[in-house]
Image 1 (cartoon, rainbow, N blue to C red):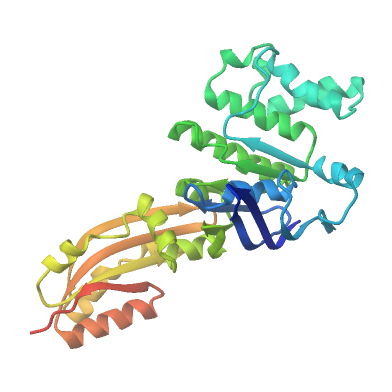
Image 2: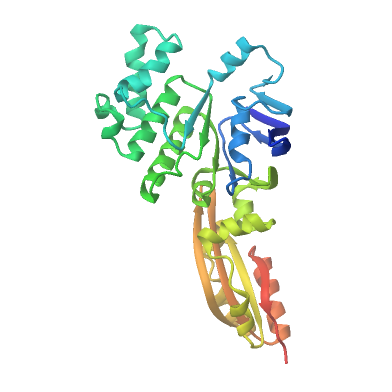
Length: 341
């Protein structure tokens, strides 16, 4: 549905060339939700604007449903864009007209027949849960309601693809969750493919099938959401995960555990999250566990549990315990310790 091949975008600023997007490759299959995450300045906003050619790439291919947007005519581009909806952080609603007209005006401009227009507006207001707000003005709405109007407006043109440019960044956590639930509903019930950008890991956690981590214009890590949450490879990915899962303990804390044993992170996936693994190894191998941190994260397609634990045992027993945990399908990452007398 969406395929970016070696996409590059450069700008000239003060006579210097700045590379905002540097050779990015992304493939989003029909009906999936993919997320691009990165800190400010990573290039993600420029990247998503390249998907519908709001920003024309300097190089590379942008293929939407089999059409390379870099090679088609302007008329063909307009037709393809008609199947790509977009929502933004700041809603971009017309302040002087009602909620109904904010959705109806783009439909009129798109040539939707007058007899179909009202039904179309009412249909998508109902989908976003605002059918009773049609006559309100944007100033009478909350931030979450404004974003729902913006989503209804994007959906009213009945796109196959929805692009989300930091759509929840201006919202409080509870409202963010409600908007993410709405996007999941839209994806499931309407079959719309969604590509979003964000700097919030909880957004990725809740709704994404695949994730791309950007830094300095490049994708530095990519994969299924569950893979990145269980085995992050790049330091930037680990930083993002630490914002929600407390994966990282301070070096000083680890060093202070001056006892025989090991400080280890155990990662449980899916059904393993309910396994009493520490109780088992304690019984079988004379290992004394001391839990330092723990959490369970619910992803769109699975559950991940992390336990950071100090395991105190003699070297031979400790190794047997770690081997047993790995054979049980638990991922192990050594953080420190193993100071043997």
